[in-house]
Image (tube, rainbow over all chains, first blue to last red; front, side, top):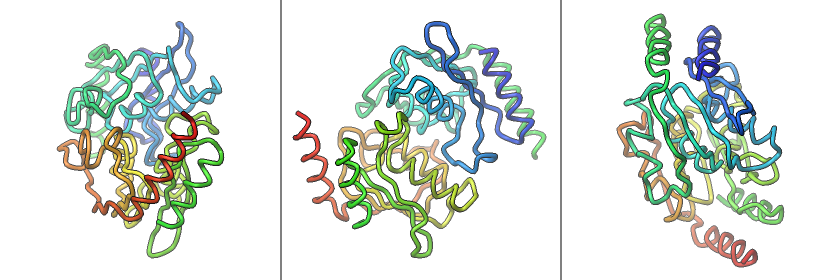
Length: 142
Length: 142
């Protein structure tokens, strides 16, 4: 999570909402990313999507069985859907996102009957630092 | 929708689940795509995601305000989330997807309080042909 938080910090410097993500398999980092929606002109470029795509490319396979995703913010519906499609084994996220989260908020996607892969979910690790990063970012822009 | 159905047909020939998508703005085609999950080794490469990314790249902007998305299957949670993030104005989809859909099934994402942009939704145009494409594809693989 330290690495994901550092990636988020760097994203903020680029003017992106500070969210970072890391994909790990068997203790090795497969892919790292940050939110790049604005710099990449890509509405799908949340940190999780970028990390999942990079990991699948690195492993040359369309699924990420056995991989873990560490991310600094609760995944939204788009990212929760991608996590299920990729068959990520475990998701660790830092801050909860009552406004846009889809794991413990809104659709609670992993509990839906239309969700065909349910990762193990561990929330709260690094939550305070991640929440601070986000608050500082939005405070500066107001 | 004719174009999206033809794109889906071509995806099936490549061994991909036959779903096609087209992004339109002011009557002009901005991007076309099909599901390329397997051929691209990308778990996020549903037709809608590929089309949205291509359209945003073509327009060099991170949002698709004023654009319409035509797709041959009801969007899943990942794609519904991406549609909301991209601020797609209108979504036209052909076949409903009771197993994985997130518009009129499962999370009913566009009705969630965590959904921050609700497109107009028109379902059923071309539904019979899209359902036939999908049934034929899965029948052949069983």
